[in-house]
Image (cartoon, rainbow, N blue to C red; front, side, top):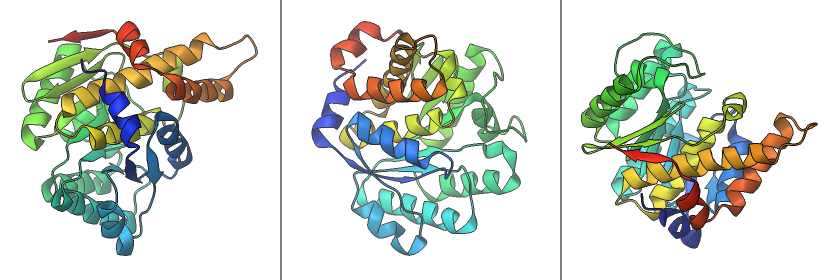
Amino acid sequence: MDFSVLGRMRAQNPRIHYICNHVTSLDCANLLLAAGASPIMAEEPEEAAEITAGCGGLAVNLGTPNRQKARACRISAETANRTGKPAVLDPVGVGASAFRIRLAGELLTAAHFAAIRCNQAELWTLCREVTFAGVDSSPMGSLEEVIRHAERLSQKTGAALLVTGETDVIHWQGRTLLVRNGHPMMSRLTGSGCMLTGLLAALLAASPQNPLECCAAASAVMGLAGEMAFARMGPRDGMGSYKTYLFDAVTNLTEDDLKGGTRYEIR
């Protein structure tokens, strides 16, 4: 793994246009700032192209969708392609409605995404294996099945895949990495996946030539930070403290921390 991508991102402090889930936008903005990037969040179609063109990368999140946001997502993704900026798609709850499924399909047809960050349920929906799944992730099959579906979707879209779960699966151009960091408390923190998507977009903005390593680094940073946050928990601490400790861990995480603490496997 290339752990230096985190340092390159911090040195460049890229501006990221994140069309975010309304439920999680504040935490996503703060996570990007903690990691060393600079967020801007805009979903007015009239300014979407201008904002995206002025940023180093784009993240598109399908949570809380509406028609105006859908237009902004498409304009921004097309602008990112035209201006050579990497774009990340987060198909939040894509199986929850026909509207989200249609929107995801339209975006993947209209633009190329450097990476797709999803959970297993969302992966299955995008691969047309199921027709309904909620926002929360639940195991849909064995690890080998997840790997096969990630390969299938990556080949279909040309995007690197970061599929989160108990073991995160990363696949791009015939290469697969498994990252086994994280803590169960992260699944109780609304928006942890959305934050990961923003972090991935920032890493890609600084290292667009290697989406596989950016996906792996994003997974490792969030997972290791989740472990470090839990290690700080006292007997009277709860989810509010855990979120604060998570931001602290992302802020202070070093390349040496990643080298020493990342548990990964190359397939």
